[in-house]
Length: 299
Ligand SMILES: [Zn+2]
Image (cartoon, rainbow, N blue to C red; front, top):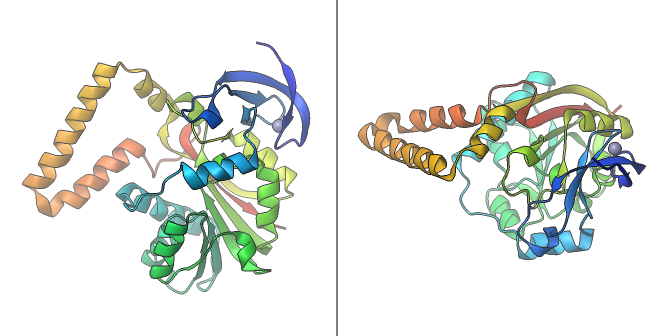
């Protein structure tokens, strides 16, 4: 494997990098690119990196948000709140900002878990998402700059960082809005390049080591970090199965997930939950999993 010197977005300088794989994307913005890994911090990043302007345009014109919030997103929001409240002592009236909040499901999850008095704010670049959240009474803004100098006890950033070409610059901006002693919660995929047939539009692939380097670069301490979800080994094995085997599996799962709830409507919700937990393992933690979650603390 040929080593080259490239600029690493976390190390902030030219470092030796190794090629990982060609980039897998459909849109022309992601054509003819590759993934490289920094040999210092372990971050894997797209090379060449699309410009910030091109990415912004892509999210405005190509990326679509859905009206339908799947049950998976609800479960994930619930698991995030369980994780956060397990690791930090949150005041009942804590001020929380969710960056890239989507439909604002995190607020619902906080309420369900007994945090009915938090002051919840959200940002999201999608006008549709902003409208949806405002209709539900959420204080929603297009970006963090719209919040002036306001600071929060906790800022949550879920499934966002892998889309950002300059994570240090992005998080530095976020940290201006975290109170001293406050927290940043990150939730993101780990090494999803190893099992996702299409990586678009992720421009970064994180590992635990690269997140540790990121925290260090930003002067933050790590309260907790863990992998969670289905094991990567299993995800890779699933992806390697033949087309026919995947088809049979999908067909079987489809039938089971329709027949059982039809026969036993009272148990349909529990059944669906069980099936989803079995597939995604949202509640299982360990190394080498689908996702990583972590809590950084600002000094
Ligand atoms: Zn690096």
